[in-house]
Image 1: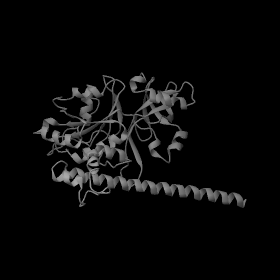
Image 2: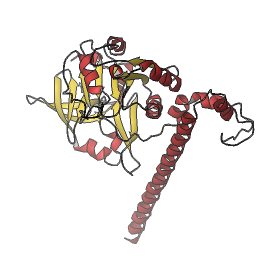
Image 3: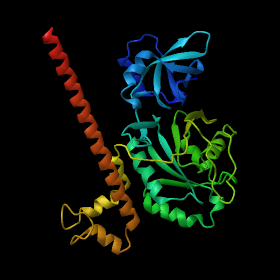
Image 4: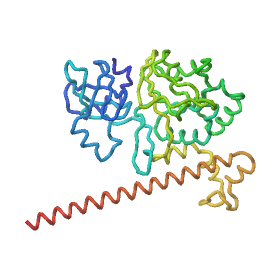
Length: 354
């Protein structure tokens, strides 16, 4: 496999200077499992584990472990088609979320992506507020968002929902497609050119696996039938995996996300809801909360039908969530710092006793 065709570029070439290993073997994570990885490389696709040194370096920060899409340096195990990962290159872009549950930790879903397909079905699963959430995280990631509205054949009037999405995602490319009739599929090939990396994001049953099969031109992923009594597909993908399309593009499949909590998404929120920020500049008070204040330009826009009140409500909800996560991060960082100095003082005290 040619590294340039796998997405290697000047960004990673520049960072290669920081690694001292001569004739380093370089590869890209193509899939990850609980304790092992698959790596695309010039030697083909290899099974890999990480070295003990790298594991120890990542143990306190799980997001430093390799993710699908990461570039890595590895040692090749001769005649075994295996590798040991020694280092991970810096990420040019990354799509992250807070891990599911109560812990305040980052989970990197995919790294070094150029385009993120936000996949939403036009049937039972359609949800504008969820699309706004995905958009905020994709803008934060540094990748280019594209919205894919699947199952257009199951929607009686897809143009109505398309208009709703356009209002919530101004300036973002939107493509209604059908995985059954293949309508709109060819329009997506422009994003899957040689060396470009696309990640598919969306909830279970949105049609991501069927879409990947159509983009690859072959059935690489087993697709389950629609559930009985509702027109919603079943969960198919169980782990993140990268595929190489016939056009040379790289496509990352991800499991459906039942939880999509924000992670350091301040800039992404500002970009996703930029019209609210622009309206707020015209409010009478500089610190207007857009509730009952006099001369609130945001409230006026709602009254005039220029802004969806549900969109503003979702914006407030996500801002509150982001603030909570940021506050918890600060508390955790302060706790770690206190623990560090406590250990230092304890060590000094024991040293001087001796």
